[in-house]
Length: 224
Image (tube, rainbow, N blue to C red):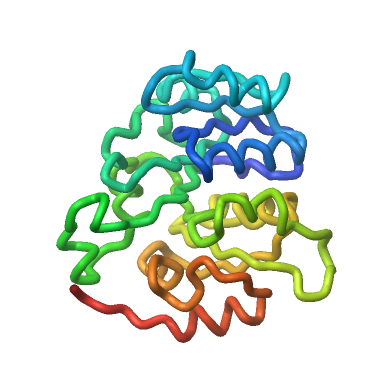
């Protein structure tokens, strides 16, 4: 069944599962761009009172399931080792943006990632078979999400990458990036999303669109 695309320039409720550095900054940028935010963490909505007060009237705290249910689009921004705890059913049919990165020091070794057989976001897509998962915001420092954005057309505007097996999901991220002040590069399918993962040339460096394209092309897949 085809799903109509959700466009980023219309007001959207964005669910955010994970209220750490990236999640809270995505929430701030989303609210600035005119969206409502429902945000969750692993410790319960009551622990987010200060954050929600800081975010203002367009934000509310919830459980992960509630954030998944409430979001027209949902951002998953949890440690990779927790990706299989993300609720599945409430996200069926929805665009899900995955910010996760794999750090074996924190997450434990995962052979499919160490040996280049899968990608971080590809594994979340397998966990969420009825969602349309796209990679986003994984290769930018959290603080830069709300400070590095510039108007479209600005020379040397910073660029960010996305990847998805679903065209509408990739396009949503591209539009969202633009509304946050960033150019975008679509890497293609999730099988290519390793090009912007940890230790690759495009990872957590400031780059314009041409530089990002070049860095993606320089990426080399290594095995542990």
